[in-house]
Amino acid sequence: MRGEIGHVAVVGAGLVGCEVVEAFRSLWGAEVTLIEAAASPLPELLDPELGRVVARHLESKGVRVLLGAPVGGIRAVDDGVVVTAGGVEVAADAVVVAIGVTPQVELATAAGAALGPSRAIQVDERLATTAPHVWAAGDCVECRHAATGGPAFLPLGSLANRQGRVLGGVLAGRDERFGAVAAATAVKVFDLNVAAVGCTAARLGADGLGVRSAWLSGEDRAHYWPEAKLGLFSLVFDPATRRVLGVQGVGEEAEVAKRIDVAAQLLLRHGTIDELAAVEHAYAPPYAPALDPLAVLAMAAANQLEGVEAVSPLSDLAAATVLDLRVDEERAERPLAAGRLLEIEYRELRRRVDELPPGPLLVCCAHGTRSAEVVRFLRGRGAEARYLGGGVSWRVRALGPEG
Ligand SMILES: Cc1cc2nc3c(=O)[nH]c(=O)nc-3n(C[C@H](O)[C@H](O)[C@H](O)COP(=O)(O)OP(=O)(O)OC[C@H]3O[C@@H](n4cnc5c(N)ncnc54)[C@H](O)[C@@H]3O)c2cc1C
Image (cartoon, rainbow, N blue to C red; front, top):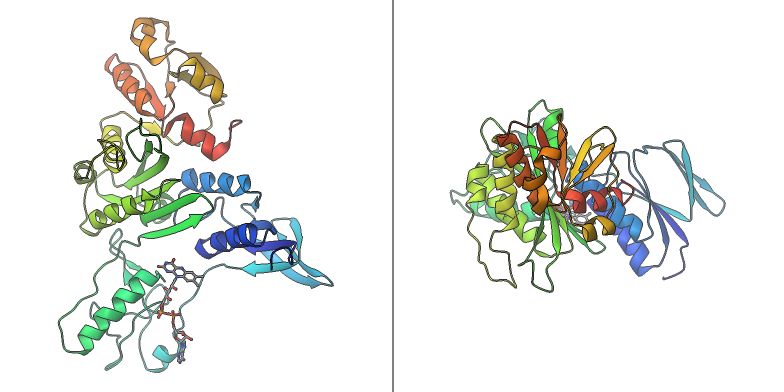
């Protein structure tokens, strides 16, 4: 098959679209254009801070990525197809449309079963529909989301399989229940492992909830371990209740999905950022750092509620006064563009603090750790300062060196 298709257009950068892109590119050697209506890939899973990291990774693998480009039409031409998206025409040999699934509910509605708000079949915890003697399980049913407490349509094999087992027990007369779900999901996008649980900040914000986010770039193992890899994690939480409502992770390290699994158990129990900060993990340098990235992420969230505030790694720095705490080699490797740039190394800062101008400062370092500490120090002196969440390493992965 390799070489038989020259150019494929894939519509929809969801789970299936991203997997199909990799298959066409890696296995078939095809040119691929990925077209997505939202502003970043995997919008149901990831907020733009991590979605943009996935977009850049796709581009680094030679995929053309069109974002914010809703497809208006697809027409067949003599030797292929032309896809019209966001004012652009993409000519390709073939197109794959992967824009989501809708539940098949005709049989159930004909039997008198009610649908829920998501238009999937409404079931109770015993997977009984509203029609007597009719049960339902799998992709056709609505679940209860642990983060929101509300109904959700989550067509996932992990849930369908568990529902099948619960329903088997129920029909055999056992008192089994299928409770709320956290929506833990994972997907591999070339060399990136992507996983998420709960809800995105964008989704909860659109529902009118005033949630906050925290960001962390952290190594998956002890930082001096030769195979240590950077993972990027974001946490969505309710500042009023301190409840964890979502965790997202992207990294070359395979443990991203396992860390999301841990967060899922906490989310199912309505855990708080304080409980996540206290999560216990098995530590040895080849397996994890002494403080697990999940715990540090939760600590960053708690710090934010004490005034050590982070801004999004995607923030516009053009109008900011940026204090860059990195050492020369770090700056040379990843230069930073800002409206006004002050370069004072972290270890020099306390000695040179009087050189800082009055007015708000945006403090930056490689991963956000040094800058969070400096923000606390500056705030203690009455200065107005915030830091770049996830640090320059995250920003460069999301926006490139020019970002
Ligand atoms: C490409 C792809 C990749 C996926 N990867 C993952 C993943 O990595 N992780 C994950 O958690 N989930 C994944 N999923 C989702 C997962 O496959 C589904 O959630 C799961 O298969 C749902 O199981 P189900 O039995 O409810 O439905 P299905 O597996 O769709 O089975 C339903 C069956 O019912 C049959 N049927 C339909 N109507 C009738 C009828 N009227 N009479 C008789 N039979 C009928 C269908 O033909 C079908 O065989 C993926 C899905 C796709 C498409």
